[in-house]
Length: 246
Image (tube, rainbow, N blue to C red):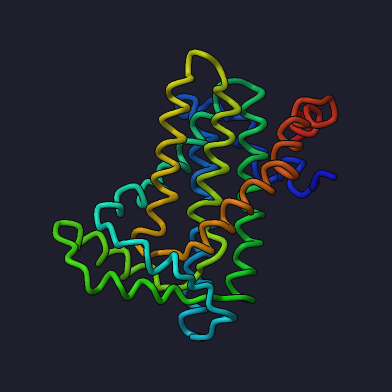
């Protein structure tokens, strides 16, 4: 049975939906991106700092595989590409009226799911203590990247990896919108970029293997039983009426 949370457009989109083609046709994606930055970004920082302050972890997910995976300094580059997935989904979702409705529902679900993951961060926190192995590695030209990362992000908010959950859902929705022969190679390159990002969360020691696996599972389950059914329902008469009545 599909999850119905986020199935109706929120009232906060009202003026932006009716004026979505203003600002050269990009008002809606700009608002969606800002909402993600505020709704997900601030929440991440608060839970991250709270876990750091509390300094308690529910369990240790460390496995032998985590110690076998080497530190690969340049993988900080694909790791940082997460921040391109948010605008990618928001802007590419302006293709037509159908994708514009799906764009809003997609971002509503992303926000709700992210808040659910924040609860896991608080209730079952895990410290990513494998990050200490980076300190003994010669980082070369990538040192400033890691220094900046560690100033912003403490070694908490481990599982499921939001890096993977959010990027996976963004790739899935864009693949849905552009599933044509014309964009075949674009989608393949996008999936390759996502694979590199997934590997990077472990080779930068930002996450355990456990975090990556649970991130993939969370994303796929949310897609199949929550996001995809609601996206498909975006085009029935009831859903169209909900958007028109905003």
